[in-house]
Image 1 (cartoon, helix red, strand yellow):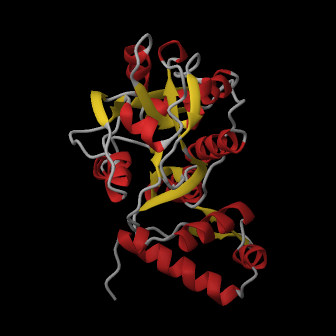
Image 2 (cartoon, rainbow, N blue to C red):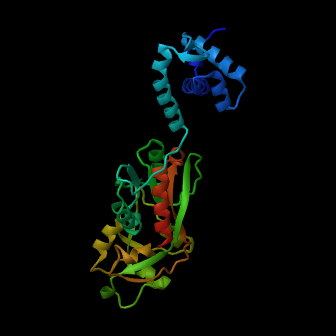
Image 3 (cartoon, helix red, strand yellow):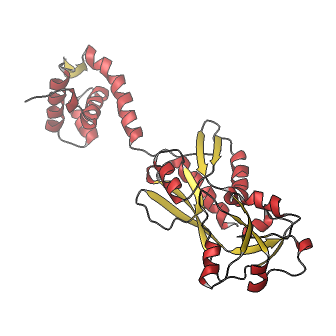
Length: 303
């Protein structure tokens, strides 16, 4: 029978330690809950693999050889390492000895609405937790960067396409509203005619000129005059303040980057839409990642 060191496994190493600690084949069998012949057979196999008797007769009992003494502590370490591989460790954010690093892909809507509370939570933890926030540019960009490990988590619009290795969790729903500087409008642009008659700013993230709002207007035979386009919500706020330009933006920005602007209902039939967090399935069981996702979900429930 061909036997080499690759035939060593957890059961044989555990059996070795039982015999070593008990100083008896019978005692090891009792602790393992198996018959003495099973332990004797395992010991014979281990001796063949190792090339050493491991235990020799000494009076009425057995005593370990010098090689067995050398093996014992090393085997204990190996078995503990194997147990660690099979266990998902917990994450204790209030433990000074723990740490975590997260790269989050998102844009400035989510930065304004979700991340300030997350940063406050992180700063209240004793563990060394560090966040890196990067911009993302559409579903394809998010999926690629989650897959290659550039991002640990992404927060944004719920991706329409279901991708097998990317998990998503819906956080909250949002709707559109119109924001404008009240000093430059006698009446709110809250009817379709008034809405289409005024100049508009829009946010387009990424390298395209597609807008769902323009699609909705086109579907009913209307259009708007867009005089300004920017890639962030914060820049829109800075650019339209003190002008007659209005912006159709997510309603929750009222308490953030659009604070101080007047707001009215969006006069176009436009469905609510969902925001979600997404991650690669390799991080699904990671305790630090589960903690982060849990905190973000709890923040979203409070919005």
